[in-house]
Image: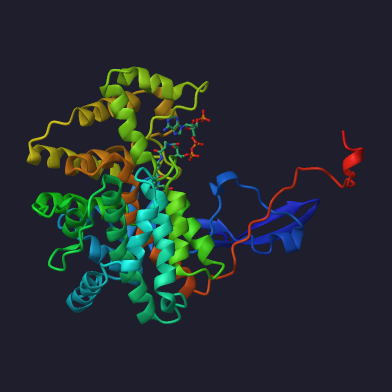
Length: 429
Ligand code: SDX
């Protein structure tokens, strides 16, 4: 197989090396293109552009494959443990008992927020968007842990990672409690990761929120399935911000902002709103699918389609089954799940969706699970961020450790004014 391609320009040949990945995917290395030819590439949305080499996650969109450090995502469904997957993504292998207990211990030890941070919540309006609070408060961690801004060794990095993964729960819970006008619940050191999150969100002085084992399993699985997805919009944002040597907290706060968008992590909220509009009789599933195909409006079938998956998103398959299992266990018959199944059935038979390889993605069923657990719709994307945080941290650290820290600075094709002169105010039209 050739190890280079030849670019022919104006009768001259320019060899460009071919790179090959562990799964035989191939790329043209264009790092010398501009120097050799004066040309740059142009690729809207970077759909054909690799930004880096990475060993964290492998996605094969044609085959519907997703693996974390080589382990197929399906193998985490039996005994889902979000904390061991976080370790796997960040440090490269499954933790042994000592590593796991040490990391879990760090998460327990660092769940509290500095009392000074709690004052920040009081300044937000009750109806502030939770993702705005989350991004602001993750960035604010930079102020309270200045010793973790320069992460030049693994032990300090590990402490920063533990603090972030633990405190994102507390920040999320306090944002929710503030929106409800409820007192904050301190983290309970006797509770595991997911149980503690639900305790901090939903316990009351007179009634502690118990976390049912199947609910804990469902949320561990949900966080695992959201934990990483190679160079998606928010992870690429974290890498780009980190490439300027910005600290881990600032980089992850930027990732939260990117995830907020309705085309990315915000889609899980839009899916619920879409299902509720149909449930409330505003339109039938058939009408909604027709509207999503109609180019005269910007409606889309939310939770459908994907830049990389041109086959089924394995996460949607698993979450759809988990939603059925959880609702049956809880004795809930959620009409929104039935509507989601009907939308999927209609779309998968529709030539518009088939021709464009549009399938349910990770956001299509996740909201059904969160709703069954009692998580309010406006907190869905915050839950996505809790799940995605280990992936952001892993990519930031991989980029840092591999010395891939050439600052990210894409080029452009300029199509504005050619040279023109300044016009004094009294001579302007
Ligand atoms: C996530 O990148 C990741 O890995 C993301 C993610 C992760 O884990 O980080 O997987 C998480 O963000 C999942 C995606 C969540 N977003 C949504 O569910 C929003 C709805 N989906 C779309 O907006 C869209 O499918 C995207 C944003 C997901 C992908 O957009 P692309 O790759 O830019 O595709 P496109 O917009 O160019 O669409 C190609 C065609 C277009 O039609 P034509 O111009 O060919 O006629 O497909 C159509 C689109 O109009 N299309 C849809 C559609 N998605 C694509 N039409 C109707 N409904 C949809 N959902």
